[in-house]
Length: 302
Image 1 (cartoon, rainbow, N blue to C red):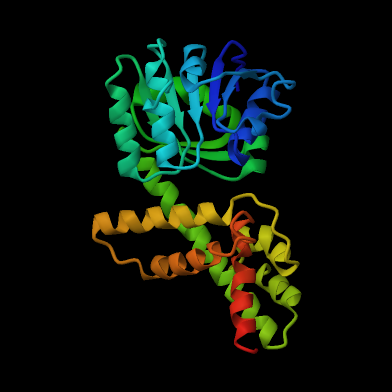
Image 2 (spheres, rainbow, N blue to C red):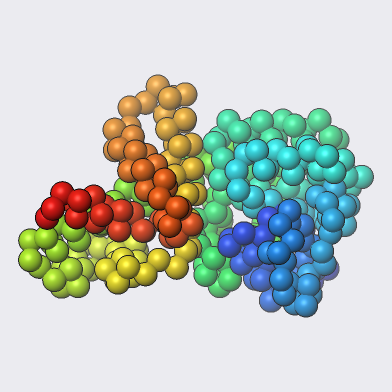
């Protein structure tokens, strides 16, 4: 990968993923500008070399590329076109790299809003992988939008991605892939949880069950990375349960728009929604759904 130390990259959103992308860019000796609504999340980044800005607009004024990685569509819309938002910047050649998980329709709306500003370009770039993948430069970036803008940002995406897929010129197309993949994560985690519970309540050591599972073709990245932590009831968050519920809700909205019937998604939504009502689980890793299902079965007296 070539060196682009003169590139100035803005990052808006300093959650778990956003912060990890920032740390990766800083370790690659790039100029990184940051804005976060919650200033407490900025701890230590300025000392690592990042420059802090007071608004999305001022950050964009000083950045060639701006990565947005915020919580949801409302937050993204505010960052883009709200008071002191990106659209108010005098920088007429910026490319927005949006990593926020939203629906394809919402992403297309964002692109349309920014198209009103001459020179601005918006790319839908949701990513697969967690904070540790970002810090190692091993995310999978899914890109849709203007092909020329994609070619401009490709060197930036290389810094934190091991694979980059360009899926077409229609903004939001990549978000369809992202949500379909996240749906797999939710359903696989539920299947792993129920398998562990069935084994445990049948008198089988869940550790032995997991060992056998991971020796078969049925193993998954989730069973290999999270299975033992689930058995040990350890849930250091890589992706909050509340955010998994948000993404399942988005999938259900998409399915209604497309006239689809997704019964497994509907059941997953109900389970994650019920678990999300437990304050102690909301901001734990999504794999805590295993504990929630265990609690249901304990309540049955088994």
